[in-house]
Image (cartoon, rainbow, N blue to C red; front, side):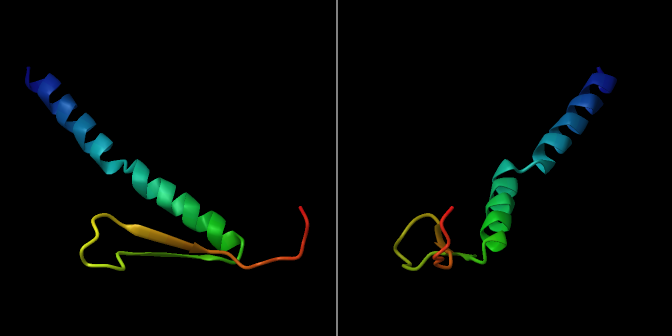
Length: 64
């Protein structure tokens, strides 16, 4: 039982170390930066609940 319990604790630790939200944010940041933009994260109004993401990208006359 102890060996099984130790294994479960190790699995819990490894799962807790994976943060999919963080990796999605990092990927989004990398894409926006690669296109010359920026991401601002904040909460503009104290009474709001949640987080606001403002993505700014430069205008381009180039056609894709």
